[in-house]
Image (tube, rainbow, N blue to C red; front, side):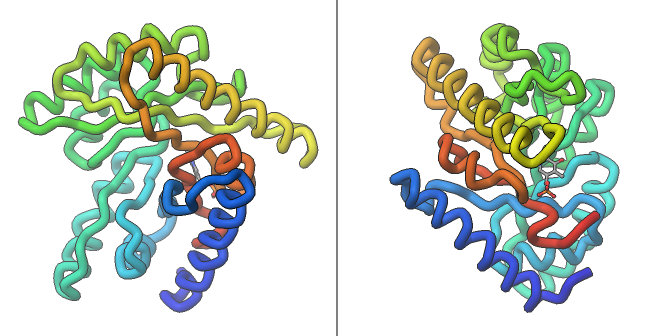
Length: 241
Ligand SMILES: *Cc1c(COP(=O)(O)O)cnc(C)c1O
C-alpha cells in the first residue's frame, strides 16, 4: 500500500490531467468528479481518499466493500474525518441486491430490469432511497456487462417506475482494442455513444440524468472530452492490481 504522501501526489497528477482535458473541451474542471477505485486494496486506500477530501470511493464487489467499510469508518471517526460514500461499480447479480443496497450509497451497475426491481425492493425494506446509475454497454463489447444501447430506454422506464430508486445517470466501460490506437478509437466511440444516449433519454423523459460515469486511468481524457462527470480511477492512484 502506498503512503498517504505518495497518494496525494498521484491525486494531484490525476486532477491536473482532468483539469487539462476539461479546459481543452471548454468545460469547468469542477464539473468532473474523481472517484478513486479502491478495489483489491486494503481499507487504508479508502482512508487515504477520505483524508484527501475525496467524497466517495468505488468498489467492484459487495463482500469486499462490506468488509472494508466498517474498519475504514472507525479509523476516520477517530480522526474526526467525514466518511466517504461507497459506490458499487462492478457487476451485481440480482440475488445480492439486498446486500448491495445495505453496503453501498450508490450502485453504478444497474443493467437489467430484474436487478432494478430487486434493488427497489431492498431499498423499500431498508426505508431509504437508493441512488443508481444504469450501466450501458455503449461500446457493444461482448465481454462487458451493461444493457445494450437499444434496451436502455426500456431499462430506464423500468428504473423510473421504481419508487425507491433515484436514477442519477448512466455509466459505461470502454472495450479494449487490439492495440493502443484501436483502444483509443473504441473509447472515443463508446463515450460519444453514451453521451448521445443520455441526451436522447433526458430529452424524451424531461429529466436531467446528469451523471455520466465514464473514463478510467487510461482513457479519462477522452471521457472528459465527451462529457464525463465522474472518472473512476484505480491504477493511476493506487498502482497496479
Ligand atoms: C477497476 C475499475 C476501474 C478503474 O480502472 P483503472 O484502469 O485501474 O483506473 C474503473 N471502472 C470500473 C468499472 C472498474 O471495475
